[in-house]
Structure formats: C-alpha cells, structure tokens
Length: 300
Image (tube, rainbow, N blue to C red):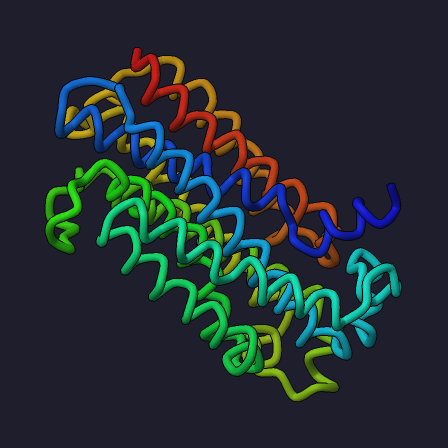
C-alpha cells in the first residue's frame, strides 16, 4: 500500500483526472457546437483519457527525477523520491514506458490531437530537462499545460483529415485562458515556497527578481483576472450552454470566492500559509472544472 501511494504521488494522478475533465469539457462544447448533440465518440474519449494520464504521469516522474537535489534542499517530503520510497531509476523507467504510450493513444484519436499532444509532450520534456531553472518561462509553461487540455478536447471530435483549430468554438479558448491565468498564479505561489532552494541553486524566479511580497501580489492579480473572465460565459450569449446557466454560476461562484480569499491573503497577510493556499486553489480549480462540466451537460 505504501508503494502504491508513493507511485500515485510521483505521477500526480489526481492531476491526470483534472486534465481529463478539462478535455471532456472541451469535447462536450465542441460536439454541441458542431453537431448539435452530446453524443461523444466514446473510443476517442477513452483514448484521450489515457493520453492525458500517460503524458501527465510520465512528465511528472521525469520532473521529480531532475528535481531530486533541489527538492531535498527545499525539504519536499511530499515527494516520494526525497523520502526514498521510490528510486530515481524507477521514476525514469516510468517515464520511458508511459511517455510513448501517451503519444500513441493521441495518434489514434486524430491528427490534430496527435500534433497538439506531440508539441505539448516535447515542450514538457524540454521544461523538465532545461527550462526549469528559468522559472519565468516555466511558470507560463505550467499554465499552458493547464489550458491546452480544453483545446485538445475541442479537437477530439474533429475528423481525421487536416490539422486545424479554426473550427473549435471560441468559447473553448476563453475557458483555456481562465485556466492559464489560474495556473500562472499557482506557479508563482510555488516559486515563493521554493525561494530558499531556488536561491541556492541559482534558479531565476519571480521572487528572486521582484521579492516575495510583490510576487504574491502578481499571483493575486492572475487570480483576479481569472475571476473576472469566469463571469463572461454566464453573461454572454456567445457562450451557448453557459449563458444564464444557474448551475454554472453557482459552482463558478464557489470557485471565485475561494480564489478571491486566497488573493486577499496574498496581498494583505505578511506571511500567508503558501502550502495551504496551493492546495486550496487546486480544490478551487477542480470546482471550476465541475462548473464548466455541469454547465456543458445540463446548461441552465
């Protein structure tokens, strides 16, 4: 049981579930827009689930492999490699196994999904191996990883003839932008948590350039922009099923309240509990995903 728990923590499988929810939301919106129904191609949905799960799990395993020393400095006992529950070699083997499997799954969805998955996967490896020490880039890479599943999901119901993103509902891109902003905020918070270890390792991050308090302020701004954008689907008829959807509004209001409370803590509290608020905002984002999922399924 301890070993299984460690493998789960290494691969962050809860993130894979959230990524798949984002893909499912994009698929539902795209299916409704293009075909006027919610009859998703189930084989494609099955394949996109494993695409998200395998690529997410493999790149997190690679991430922890390359981050082992800095995680030890930062006393990241939440990481199984730091605790010694899993060997670095095992983490590397998980990457070698799951990474190609994820790409293979995407290939059998359609060519658009394969291209998106391939580009994203290669950027992920580049991030783990090279870009991580430039966290100003890495922050926005992680935010991109949180946003692209919506677009990937929108492409899932497309045919397999050409690589095109032009037929995807523009609402999906707005939703992806909301995810991008919230993701960027969380990553800047992580920079603050890792400040001491990053300083020793020479990692360039927001706190090293502008200080911890200013970085917290920037993170809160990203959350506030995400909050503002989240109301657009409810008030704009261009967003179809989300327009005046009470179910969407209630759930997204809960998410926004959670993000707003974190933003206020970051701005007004000298030393906010960053570890708590990282988990708190992850829960908020999960509820936000449910808001878009429920809105796509039942509308008003």
